[in-house]
Image 1 (tube, rainbow, N blue to C red):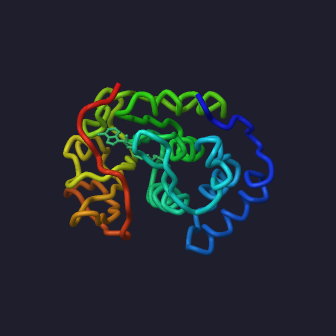
Image 2: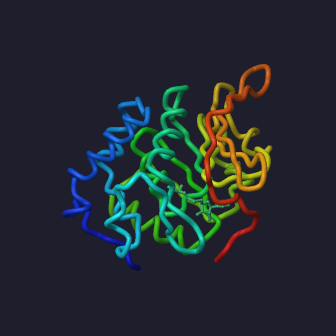
Image 3: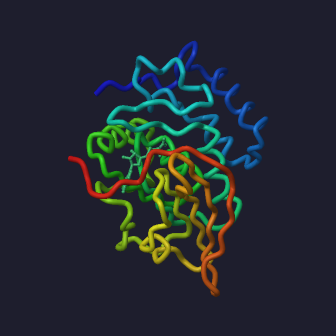
Length: 223
Ligand code: SAH
């Protein structure tokens, strides 16, 4: 595997570079200090191929292989803060582990994280990174996240990091009452709206947050 294993980083991947990214996130409106604190400590360069590591602290999405991307730091921060600021974070489900960066941010603000990825080679690399970082509250599964993780449900919060055309019903079913979900939903070809949903006694309430760009949520698995 070709991941940059220098945790602290030098030059373009140093702590000072990381702090500049955090300032940029503040400038863009991120206000949840617990999320900013976790992201300030987390080395994003270890989630990216070595050849690309010098761009790790730019506020941009980058390719991670297998046609997938690591999400833009602003989007990771925004989706995480929407969940943290709206309620409990004991049992959190993530759909789309990818490189594992969002998972690792969640691990810093949740009690337990459950993350599902459909592409096994990506998942394997992500697991190596969780070990490298010493994260002990992350559980992972290779499977189709559309179906959620029935055995570990219900969840206080669900984050979906790939875009479906509609909110998957199994995920709504696996939220506790009072549980929230952040999910990009395709509204027209190539255009997605980020939604914050909440399950209440009366049903599902929904708020549109902003326009986003994610890879599509696909069915089935890749070995
Ligand atoms: N969370 C990542 C972003 C990953 S990109 C980050 O921190 O940057 C989206 C990921 O969702 C891809 O790895 C893709 O393979 C995965 N994905 C797409 N459809 C899926 C599905 N049905 N179940 C699980 N993972 C899925």
